[in-house]
Image (cartoon, rainbow, N blue to C red; front, side, top):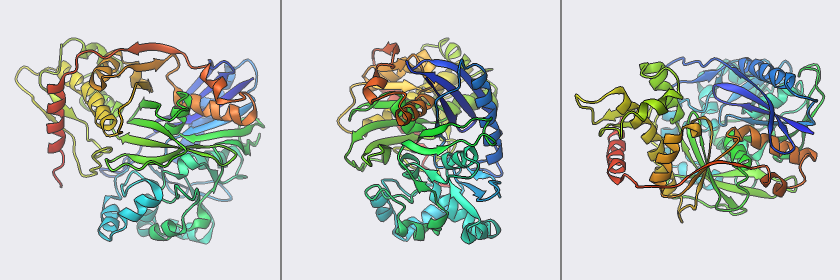
Length: 485
């Protein structure tokens, strides 16, 4: 038996056919356009996401020996999607997790004294990153669209909910706890949409999806809507929680970092809700069909791989993202150059939406290689910032995502953390986690122990000498980004 995993990311959709022994039998990928209406605003057309999903899945299925047994979904989190309950058409583009337009709304709510209560209920903080303030912005700025929400014709969800709606031809309007816990509307302790939060952010509870466990009976694909397939949708999770699951971090204390557009460090905290006073988020990792929830602490870094993309697309100093490693290796260090890639503000553990990126330490001898190396070092420094406030230290880090294929970055990361960094053979662990959840939900795998047997090490990076002076320069540069305005 095999599983079809759909990974609807920020820039494209990946589809994998995953075998019972954890191999990738075939793969499909399709990009979709990014829209930037104004500085700090990021949007996606939901129809583009759906068409990319169809294209990626069709490609993966063409390479499969037999039809899959079930479907699993993972997705970019926090993105606010609206669509017509009957036609499934979106009345406007989705507001993406990277979007910062709601900074003023967050400041207003903070000034009114709401942040402590919001944090108590949700484990999150008032930041434009999360879904609810995006919905508040739409209610205040697009009354024509919002009237459809209030009348019941337009429903609200994150990308997982939207994909399930499209896959089932509108039969199901659902989400899971890992995605719900990123909205600022979900209570960590109650496991439900909180009426108090819905009222605070002005979101009709009736427009929100039903919350279902992360694996089990979620829905069924409609053949007329989804490539002629009638399959159970039996697993679903937000991308970072799916990666934690895909890395088989099932025990409390196990840590993974996904190096993608941003970087996201999650540590499994088991059945206990741990709260951080150092800028980390408390989130649901997954929920079993029994109702038992596993929680995680998360450090969300907004720009890491996207900084390498900026070198390529914005500055033109490299031709491809993988080229960054070869260019960086031509110099022994960054030559004193420090790059703080606060291109969309700073996430954990600093949480400053007003921060702006900067480059310091430039001299007449600075070359593009120094800047490229400084960019890779910045990624490692950002991750160290988060790990250092996790408390208790970590024994090791499991790495995945596109940038984890960069050996230089992984070695610098191990050096900076002072612990081994392990990279699995399959680095697309976000999609793999969706496959694992779906397979558990439909009987392809009997238990998490079976899944551990499918995890295989590609390379282990052992820590060497740590450049503390470079890290001190980084911390000083981060402090300079805090200037408002």
